[in-house]
Image (cartoon, rainbow, N blue to C red; front, side, top):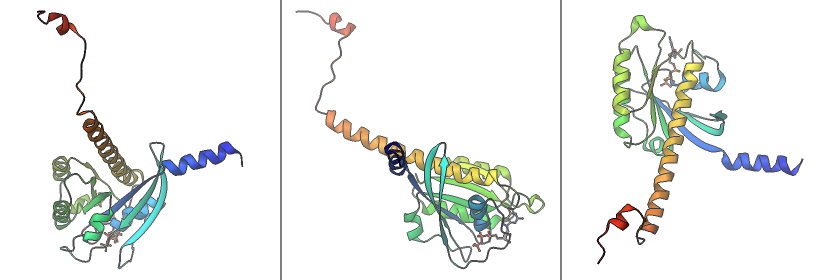
Length: 213
Ligand SMILES: Nc1nc2c(ncn2[C@@H]2O[C@H](COP(=O)(O)OP(=O)(O)OP(=O)(O)O)[C@@H](O)[C@H]2O)c(=O)[nH]1
């Protein structure tokens, strides 16, 4: 292997961002269907699992290599919110409800209340193919997302590939953005502190305008 190739691999490894995402929502909203759709592009109608599942997946997001860790959570009841471990583990949350299930919409609101204010989230209304059974309007989803200042989309894991991937990718972008901002503000604070003893002097018009004595 050439030294250039080795350097390339080293660079790639060192720039690989890790993003941990938890997929949360009420029972049977399609969390597993969405996760498997994103990871494999396939739809698995009946996905029987009794506990949460964790996946690792490497992809390019806007040209940047990202190691995605996805936690497909498993809620057993409508009042079964994600554990403190999950809340602490994830960098971002895909909040999923089913447009056919009003209770699941209320569920994501309760989850949001349990999160810190600036936690990256994306809001997904799944089962968009079942409009005849709709209980939550698109507008309600949009209003909630506006309130949360987050990405929102209605999707159908059963029929769509790109739209489902978009939800995960948008969340990933948000995690990376927040990370960059936090890094920058930390840097600013450090530099700000360092410079706090310095007086900024700039020569300008005001110099000559000062009264001379
Ligand atoms: N029509 C329709 N059905 C869907 C869609 N997504 C999931 N389902 C169905 O909804 C049911 C629940 O899907 P899951 O993916 O197991 O849901 P889940 O949220 O992971 O369920 P739990 O892990 O038990 O909480 C299954 O019967 C799926 O086939 C969708 O987009 N459209």
